[in-house]
Length: 384
Ligand SMILES: *Cc1c(COP(=O)(O)O)cnc(C)c1O
Image 1 (cartoon, rainbow, N blue to C red):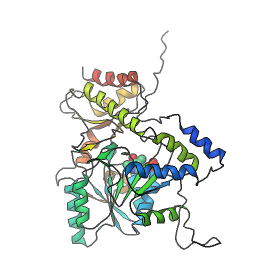
Image 2 (cartoon, helix red, strand yellow):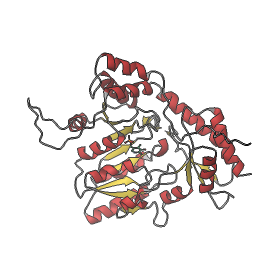
Image 3 (cartoon, rainbow, N blue to C red):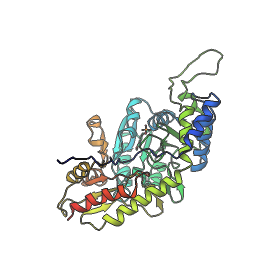
Image 4 (cartoon, helix red, strand yellow):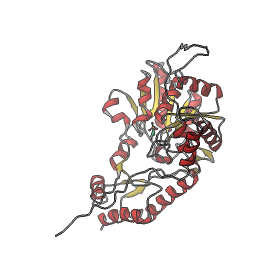
């Protein structure tokens, strides 16, 4: 009788504990600081600020909360426009809707898969004509690859519109030697379970603008005025990170450098073993940038292969291996069907092409060599 034993599941990106997390959690218990204040929160904020070379950081309950606070701090409100990368996770743009503002989506360019300076410039030209400049521009660094920051910053500076850098996926990456996430007026990181390091859930808002971050702390703790009783003049949020979760984050942060090395190593092995296959092109890394290679991704040109994106994903699934198409562009999501969109060139939407042809492979830093071999074998066999 034949028995089928399901092979061990290989996930796209899975939490990878360092071993030091419990030490910080225990300290929190011993001192009874188990809520949203305490030594771990303070230290985690200082450690992140120090790591990325900014003056200050505010630990919050999620990356999404950090983006929401950033928009609030830049006075984004009802009816305002906010420009945002289209090829990203929905969390980049949801907070625009929380504020009652309107997203305008900007396409990617082929060299980083991130925001296209050409599309951004066209969006600004139209905005000037319409007399409605955006209040902010949200630039995403996809899968750990920094965007073309010099070009994008020059355009935003020209129109004097502040940048929020969504570096949820790019902690540990750099652009011209400077940490990803530090190029905007405000930057955000995520410590969700699937990110390069995790606090089980959490985020960080970073900036050199201490005044803004002071206000962020105030807004994130229910906007309580300075008075002996409970007094409130503006809407606040309960967005602070707990001291327990900050402990997990601290244990993880100690290993960030290793995690980046490992993910880059995993990318390199996929590249070495698969890049010769016809029609397969890996996500590029722009000169003078260093991606953290959070997720290894590539595109498949179905015209020159005998396989397809769907077939590849389902063949991996048959072997209990998780893989995913790249993000579905937000401009084509039902949620945003009425939003304006600026493609890279008038006749060329790069994000739509990437969505049709792109695949993300398992890239977790705790994936074993044997597990990676399983993934590689499935793909190589499809090209036999
Ligand atoms: C994960 C992610 C977020 C949201 O972070 P959470 O901590 O899950 O709220 C925002 N933007 C991008 C690009 C992400 O990948």
